[in-house]
Picture 1 (cartoon, rainbow, N blue to C red):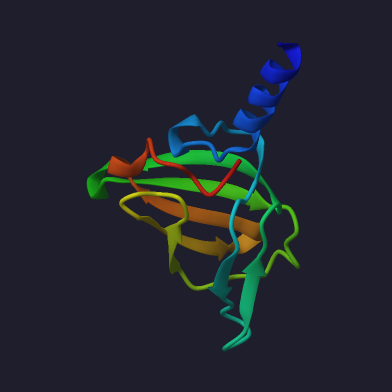
Picture 2 (picture 1 turned 90 degrees about the vertical axis):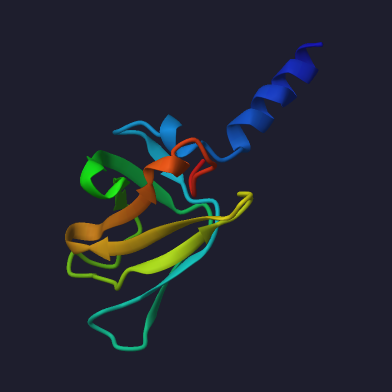
Length: 126
């Protein structure tokens, strides 16, 4: 019985969290690969791989456009000047498919823009 309970808890911990469940100051691992075009290196892609760590720094409601902005510190960033263009990223395992806007801004901040209607869907993080 204890083994079954332990395996159930482990399974829950390995699943992606919903956007609504993410907490500021917590470290999360990204669950899927995303590719972002780097601004300073035209045509060069930044590949963020599954399991890379991020720390959620803030969640900002942009009520006037029905969007929530998640700002996460990218722990494996190559330098504070890294910037990318915004890309539309489909979130895996969502039905219907949820799409987010993603970009890296100054000081290694990954910015994720999510429509408020999608707050209770699976996120890119576990």
